[in-house]
Length: 63
Image (cartoon, rainbow, N blue to C red; front, side, top):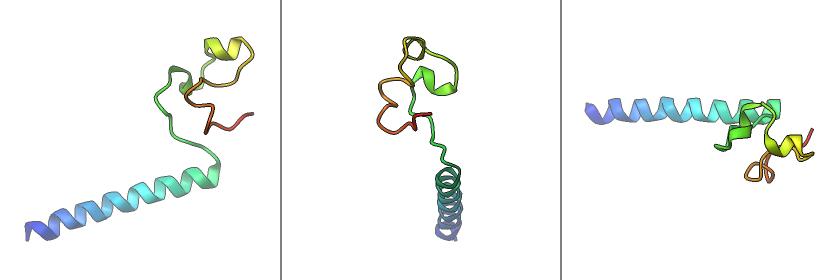
C-alpha cells in the first residue's frame, strides 16, 4: 500500500513539474539560475551596458 501512495505522490509531483515547464515555454519565461541579477533588478553588469549576469547569458532572452 505504501508503494502506491509514494507512486501517486511522485506522479503528482511529476505532473506539476511538467505543467511548470510547459507554462514557462508557452510564456517565454525561464527559472532563475541562481544569479543575483536574475531577480529582475538592475545589476552591476546591466548598469555597465550588459544585460543579465554572466551565468544567465547563455539561456536568458535578450530584451
